[in-house]
Length: 403
Image 1 (spheres, one colour):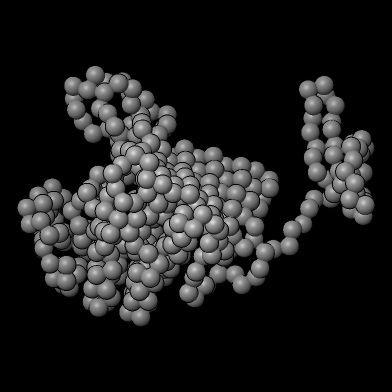
Image 2 (tube, rainbow, N blue to C red):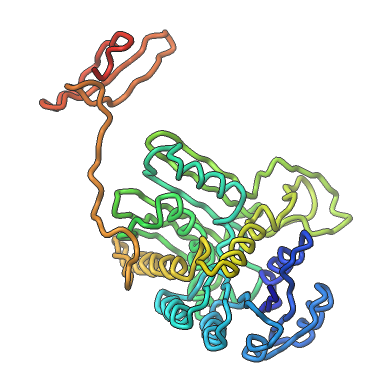
């Protein structure tokens, strides 16, 4: 696969590091950005043969099979439309659009052109996430009731992120898009997101957009997705997920505390980890940052999908749904009320809230709680199916429960 990367900033370099690693057969053949000097330096570092400063020229180049969009949010639509016009598969960084209207326009463009549109949501490809999601799909934690995702750090690197007009918002559009899609995966992408309650505020930085936000996303089956995002968290980048099910729980710590700790006086001055606030003292590096953040698995999935003529795990449709949820979050932050998620052309399950079933203790009672006390006594709390009375029961003799 011959790849063009549009952009030469922070995320473009992460993508290039992933694409150039492990002797991959897929190669970067084109780098495109507006700053000619940056483009030349980028191309020299990664041994890229072709460069351009014009987006359309780069996309149409005969030595380009697939395009990776690593541009500021306000340029995603233009880039995706150029790829659709050229009939070339396009992989776009998150968020897909600044809002759902832009994302829908991109989704419709790639589908009309009959090309693959891959949504580069790297945190849905981390090794820990993939293993956790497989466990959830096997039923290891039962029905997912609540999925919580947190991403906080001291703020992004580039100036455009801090512009509400260029980015489409603040920390919620930047970080919340990760958190929303993580929760969607755990709860089930086929489950309709119904409404959102959100608090957002500008607490620290002199900007028009929010730098802190918390939101709840209610799903049609009764599950709740929760996101916590901040551009004012001190101490590095905190990426954590929690999933609570009827039969188990998952806790993930993806970045801040990795089991790798290093002390340095700072004399070397080297890069330690993304969003690290210092290069001295006790630090928490990441062994293989590109791999641990999901880029390796993400691009493998994307290119295999293109080769096989199928859709990747994360598509433009997913990016559109994420934007629709975040639109509702911004509306809720303004109204201080639950706001509906507005989706055009929902493709998931059509059913309403699923009927809840409760575990039976026996033919007469539901089981509420079973617990072993420090004394060795087994406590059993049940509810009568007919009268509704809640009672403490003596545990049934072995082999009689449920008969």
